[in-house]
Length: 390
Image 1: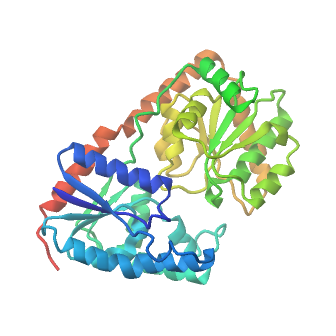
Image 2: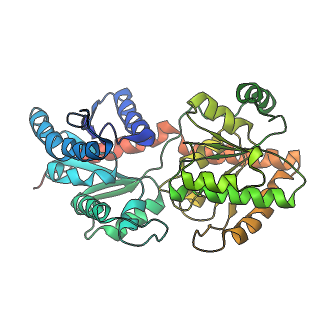
Image 3: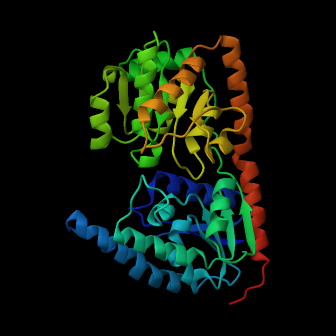
């Protein structure tokens, strides 16, 4: 098969989409297919302009220059070529490929739902609403879809006005680097690397500053737990430097000396952080899949996460669940209740922990890359066999 993956502008791509596109591309190449990735480059946006102007120049790269590039380059490709939108948020390019063999990979609809006023925690401005409307109008024209979770597939079906030719669900795949390690040795190594006292373990969170990652909720949960426990295990928060809002909440914590933000963390340090954690806490509000839940489980860490889809879909029977935190209600009440579960997990016996970790490792096998790539390849071949209709 000839496959062309279409990804975001190089300045908008982000770690997750870069990783996902590379996973698809390398996986298809290993199976003998001709696969490449196309994306808008910074032609206008690389000029020396203020950041506010560069944002609009990136849109020009994306909406004006890239379509021309696409039409010229695709004219040299056979009609059997499959064009893949690696993210439904690239729906504005659907007019370029709707009459070609195509498929749209769907991840999450948080931004779209926010623009429609369905997520009160994340109000959207006028230009954001216009942009999401353009994306929705685009991907609704597609005939073939692959969703990363049953939850995402369910949300996709809500937005579609007609039944697509193909509507499949394939989970995201775990990188094979995520696996258990020697907990004692790793904690000692992290002590030396980070200059922190982590011999007795730590609570871990991984996520950015986006509202749905609920970093404030993580700190509130930690505060409530420390208030009720005799333990003094630190909290490590891996991601970007905290936003002003999150930093202000952190500064008000009476336990801030035991809360540590780790930024610019490479894959090796991320893996060790998962492996050495006493427990991984992920009280996310919304996700399309929830990579960290699966990564932590595969690395041998017990997981506490939100009892909402898709977190409970990914965590299965192996995760420990807490209620969803509402940013519009009393967060302290939620934190106190959730802290009881955190204290319980941190107090279980070694044998109980072994059972929990074994269940996590077994659950994580659902996300092995080879098996999932095989499913995607099968769908691509099915699309290749569909007769073209304009």
